[in-house]
Image (cartoon, rainbow, N blue to C red; front, side, top):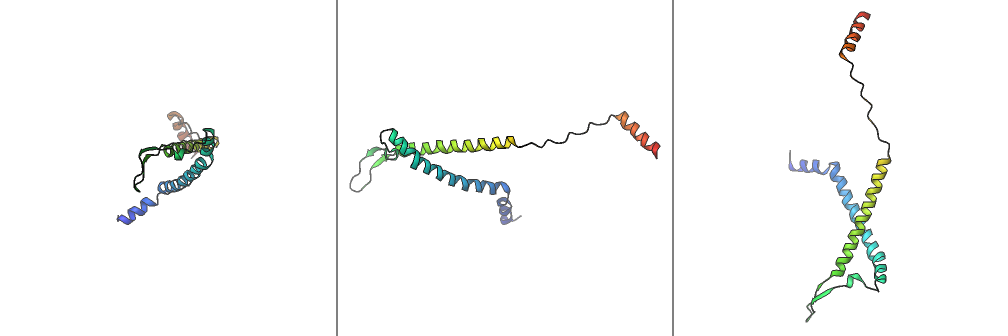
Length: 134
């Protein structure tokens, strides 16, 4: 099997395509939630905490000198990213929980009960009956 045909077989599997769609939708969902956090939630949190803008919080290790930028630890951006992550994780949890609830509410197809095996003596009698009918 050639390299190209192996790759084609791999790429056309349903799981790979489903995963690719999930990654694309997840990226878009992440942008939506990041916007929700950055543009809606964090300004409210900033007002509640006395006007603090979390993305501006930083610890300066070395001041800027002669055009060389300052060396800083931007812990405010880290806090913002953690809030993003927690909200994204919570939203995904809620979506998965809703999907599982819907999945459990769907009627389940139960397999038809298998006929019990006929005892040997009854099978023998049925065979004799069939022979006598002939």
